[in-house]
Length: 99
Length: 535
Image (cartoon, rainbow over all chains, first blue to last red; front, side, top):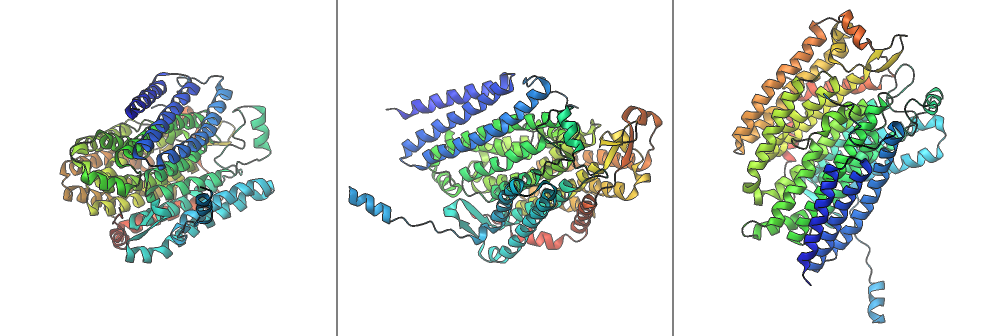
């Protein structure tokens, strides 16, 4: 079993997530990109835990899941609130604040 | 096999936790939890006073706990608790004390209400702006008292952040301080669309960078087999050549922290969030987030980065110079007071970074002093902004008057308030006899001593340009008068009478700014003694 395959997969997932954040317009999709980045990181943590024969990486993955869940609560609340106000969740529409 | 399981089962030893050094953090987070219970069980009328007393007592108690721990830390250099997850050394303790103190002052501004009993927060954050529900909530005089526990949770995260001994604790602390701030930014009573927009921008960019931070943590874990900073530092010492995991990890972790301090090119959120968030919260996060994030950045830079210093130096220097340049030049072009202070916050991030990049013990103490000086002045400045309000055609006091033209001639109508604001501007500008001067002097000297003379030069040039626009604000306040033209475009302006808490906060900020400027030596000695990190 070659562990570096998992690292490559995780990096690809992370890159897809980052690209989603930077390119997509809908705030929900952008947020899904962030979640993909977090889960790619979990894969890296677990892979390295296996490689080092050390459990702490797996434990960290749980911490990341908990934090991601908390982030979802706050993030969706903000996005839903914006959607109810503007009937749109596009990140291009929120453009009142500028120089 | 059963025998082995029994042995494991009975052989459980509870972890030995040294609770005393954790007291400041536990007090603040405990009060946050208690605040949530207050929301559930205390009748509505009593919630605000109970929450306010709880929050002020918690931050003051944390400050007392820090003072009580100080002598021990000074003598021993600090302690490592929770099996290495938290390190309570000199810098960590000083930063915790600073967060508690600045949060205490910021809470006064957060809690204050204007003449009509309205605070700075939406009566019901869930109500759609402009809806009947919102009008009813306003008429009923509802208040979103969850603000206090949220501020306490954020403060608790900020106190853990600079004391984190491993990167996982640092990540969790980063989220604990960020998530409440995202919500708080979206709670503005007036300009609710701006406020919600600020929350969304802050949240999306913040979540994005914390994911990058986390990926960096994972890479460093792969590099060293542990996320403990001391283990990573040991591993860097034995590494030959350049390990991509180490370099990539350090860079990504640094991106996460540089975002939080608002360094260019990760600064895009700063002016928008500073402008959109409710002003008391802007003051809170401008001061306290900066203190916490610079604390964590210092620990990373001084414990882990020395091994890769030569590889990172050009990048870090470029970040510092860009931050100073963008912060000062962009603030020249602004017309909105909160945006001006937002860009000025970026410029100050650049000035403080010169002391961080210096990699010199004097750099640490200089940064600590600068953070205190800047924090005091910035909370005071935003507190003044909360009091200067627009008046609509019917003569009712509405939102804050943030356009620069609306501030014209304020010095003649409210000389004390305008005088305090000018003092904060002079401190930002680094005029002698204010705290800002000593802070700038300390970090630039450290930069020269640490072999970063070009950065010190950039800092001095940046400060000189910055003086220009701070003085411009002073001129607007005292030497220009309001034209009827400006009144017609922006509406009339008044200074509201409040319950007085904001005045207390401004008074404290003035005392700190002058006190640290005229008699800096006690505090300089204190931060000088504190400037050693335990790896």
